[in-house]
Length: 292
Image (tube, rainbow, N blue to C red):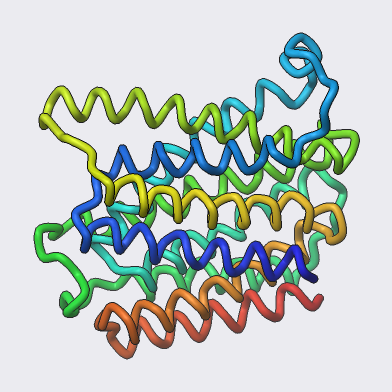
């Protein structure tokens, strides 16, 4: 239960901090790169000692950890842009509606049995997402520079990235990592890959835009890294104690509730009655899915 709580708190904090990036003028690529450096250092601090570089690079989970790390970096950029365009609440729910992807994967590859009730609930979650993404007016906490199709495509990108990333983490945790003692090392390698990808993106963006990093990038990026580490530690360890079809719905429900409250109360995001109905429908469907 403690790992589930850590995953929920860490996850809901990420999109809130990414929203603050925009409000505080934090360099997106610099902040996200710092985040991965900090998360990698924290993970490696708890990694088991004694493994050589050859043993690590030849481990069955090494390659997939690099892929996940690179995808996480790119997904953070999409998360940040979506939080700025569509708000914290919509972005978080779009990401958490991605529970559909790892749950279906668990049905297909891990032998978890699908039922008509579960299939119906997954369909309800997708329908709720469409209700949540229905265009509405910009609230006080949302920037108006994003218009039209970006307001729809960015949350969809969050949905796809989040679903694929969580599915890959679930697969690696169940099929490739033989011991929970190796989770910190797995996370550390993953975060290093994310930091390297972020550094490449930062340099490319810097060349185009002549961006200069400051102390704000370091401070907010470090805070993001701490919460990212807490989130991933909770996820990989939580999956060791719960089936993916149970863990992810509980994890997503908690993250949706906290982020929605933060979006509406802290950032004054405006949601339509249809958006609220979609939120209630999504939370209800995900909660029921976790109990059957």
